Length: 401
Image (cartoon, rainbow, N blue to C red; front, side, top):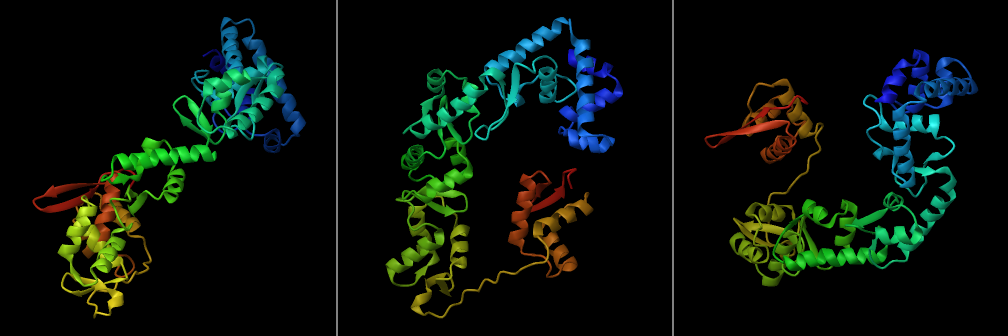
């Protein structure tokens, strides 16, 4: 690259100053900060910078590559291209810093790097068009606020005679292919709500994972929560799992057990409860139902696998769950164990014994909790697991540990 070669030919002091001001390798520094580091005034730093730029200009002038590069920047300014998209200007330095150098050396009177509170990032514009750009930003906001549906980006561009990039860089937008709308627009919100509810109505027995919904809807997690909170057709079964409410009564599994017991008005066996729940939730796991009953303080186990509502006054045989507060997080302790025993394989039983022996009551030694944390570490590629006969073993597999 021409600019890379010429920058290397500058005096070391000039190169260092321009590197700090424009941020070739790191964030750019202000005149004040550089002045404090050099022990000189802000004005003296500005003078030195001006001289360094003039020397660089003398090196670049009358070179065939200069005209081609300037034409690229001018075209980008005409289209209001975001500064971060200006790539290919340097092999050795940050592209946005090199674009700033080109502008200050040759295009300072005609091109500007523009920023605005309503824009996501800095864009390139012509200085003479700055007032028009500001005016168009206000008009884009007014147009989108008045819409009841998504609008073609091209239609707004033609109507305002502005670039598509200016529209795309506007903050708080929701995109739908080549259409756009304000994220806070209530009309658009209800359009998304209808779209989400249609997904569930078309798949009434399917349990949806949160990540799948985020991908299908092209929205963020807070938007999804807002939609589900306002929908009467969608029910949250458990963390990150959702279903169509007409086929999945009562919300959580615990509430569903409570519903069937209330309806029966008498104790029920786990087998009968599970069969009723399976009709509503074909994919429910037996362990999930047991866990839900265990956690629900309105349901008691009055005999082996026989359950009743607490309000009925039966003698309870259900073990009370006591949530302990531990000194250490189990995940952190497991990471330390694998870090200090890189070549060893551990079963869940091995880890439980290790925790009881070394940490005693300072960390959870529950086998279920150990298993869940090991699975998380496995998904994060920090440990891997192998199966041997009926046993499962875990071992450190990452340099991160």
